[in-house]
Image (cartoon, rainbow, N blue to C red; front, side):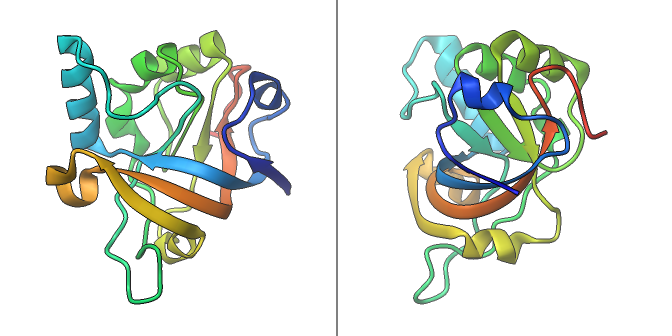
Length: 172
């Protein structure tokens, strides 16, 4: 199992292959459906995003409230296909990686290849494990969306599998 620190460089992404198991440490942003819609409202109206997209990793998840002494509650992945219509443009704007659950469409695969980017799969039903890998969580955008707001997570040893690599290979 490879241990990598985010953000990943293009050279690191080129070394990843579909099926590789990874432990990620560093900063991950969360964004589910509602946050993606809000991101696109900003982009379409020419407003700057309230966070940096270039070289970012977005986790398709919404963290549950933390119990005392914890940075986050359960934080499992949501179905990635719901972001199929958003992901290609975000990759074209500099997104490096996304993390979610399940297969993504052909247009996402093409965007990954075009931008030397990748898509990681997280394990559905393992939200408690992912929550325990979060050292710090803060809401950084769209607070009114509650758990679907954009959160900045600092993670250590966050387990994922390379689901789609920058060469067009997929575990699906």
